View 1 (tube, rainbow, N blue to C red):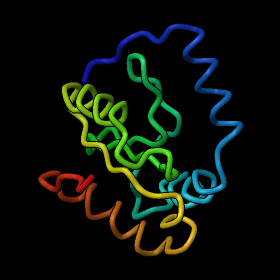
View 2: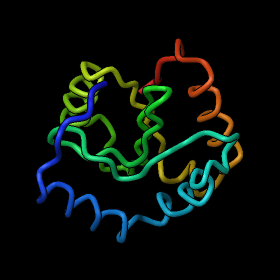
View 3: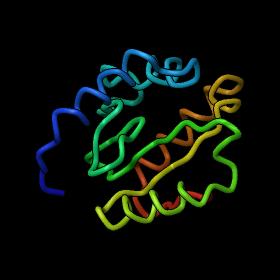
View 4: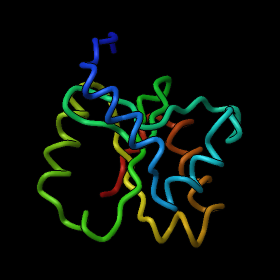
Length: 123
């Protein structure tokens, strides 16, 4: 996955998203930052083409999106995921409620997807 330049406007927008994370994103970031989760390196609010991924583990080719109910059965999310898949990423979508209610299960799921690149997201 070669590095591609990011437009300054996209980079600035990603920075604003880092400052304004949702509660669920903020809580998950506390688990993921500084290799706290099983020594795995994650970055947050990373631009990829016309999209910005919530969290990414480059080494595992895994993007994690933390979604609210507005993302249920979303055509735009399917299109976005397909484009990111072409770039070599798997997209794991987690519900806000799951992150807020059962962080242990969420972390176990993330570790499993990072450690086993054959796992494919279920939604």
